[in-house]
Amino acid sequence: MKVDSMDKMLVSELKDLYSAENQITKALPKMAKAASNSQLRSAFEQHLKETEEQIQRLEQIFEMIGESPRGKTCDGMKGLLEEGSQTMQEAEEGPVRDVVMIAAAQRIEHYEMAAYGTVRTYAERMDKPQIAKLLEMTFEEEKNTDQKLTQLSEKVHSELKRAA
Image 1 (tube, one colour):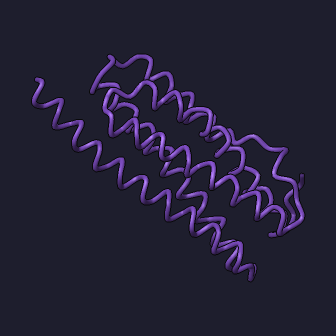
Image 2 (image 1 turned 180 degrees about the vertical axis):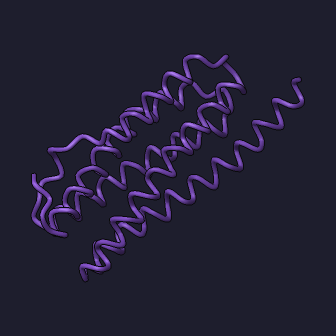
């Protein structure tokens, strides 16, 4: 699709987010399984449920604008997930791997916050308040997940210091 209007830009960005979220739903179960810290495992499992709700929210937006969510691959997310997977495989099992997974997950959260914030702003400027509200909900969830990951990172780093 040639992007020659803000409407098409909005659709293109929403399709990108839809692809990104679907990719994440495939990665989170693997991350949860690889986590040695029970709180981290639980956080990944909780975020999977949240991500599934975010996909439903995006599908609701696509219904509102009369478009299909399919047809685009988010290469940015694909790269982040591939890099995170590779780093995770290289890391020693246990707290070191947990730290690596937290870092990878936070990169993903920051990517999503940037994307949702941008698309929310497009919707606001295009006078689409319902869409902007749905996108803001997801933006806030991503921000909260990032904060939880920061707290978990501090705990896991403390475990590493004690073990050293």
